[in-house]
Length: 330
Image (tube, rainbow, N blue to C red):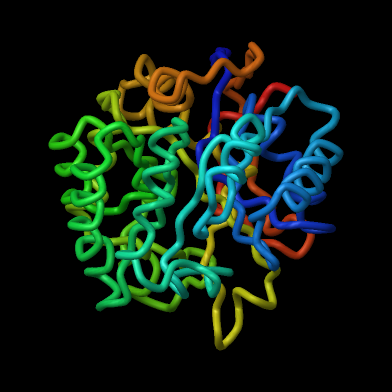
């Protein structure tokens, strides 16, 4: 049995730089027609030169595949000339509250001061992507950020705001209240809960931000994805770290899921008899919401089992050692 997906997209992807990028980028390019590339490097992608050099590095690493990198800028107070000059080179601007996750030390410290830039983005039709967490108690951080989304949605009704990698039922509820709010969700947040991360022995390769939540939150996200929620898009948040940064006292946040994304998504949707809704989740909704027209591409998967390697280079993948039912047709 073969399943074909037309122009699948990953709407949230970390590729890093240098040797790490060359290792991980081909996994995404083999499965997806394009991906939204995160800008939280050191230094961040926040100017024309950095943007051009990073795009060139990605294109070189993914050259064997027809893969479209949808580039983003790291949020800072941009002026109109800068945003207008880069409008045709970027997909969106990504906002990180200061210190909230990996490489976000240069993020926004005071969220009340950024409205002039948001107004410019609204006028230019540039989407705002947000890592929406506070600095409160870890399980409450996403919920505590939801009023910020509400304020921005009301103040800038023509600004497309994407709540990135949502993890709670409360975030899903907020989607229904504002027409300009949208969301991405990851594969791992459809499958795991906090118990999988820390309920027994600590599983560092499942530690990510936002951290996995309660079973009720996981189940709400899964139900929304399976039914083809029209405002929900797949974004893997695949975020590789070398093993010495994961199995360490100061464990880095991030799940490296890129090698297994489509095989596991097909298996998940098949198990719930929802394969008809998978194309919308992995590209169709994103194209409709954002008016994207990536180059046409068909990706096929075949029902042949394979075992996920224990590691790729010095990175441990999601589902390492597990046997999956579907594999990519090269």
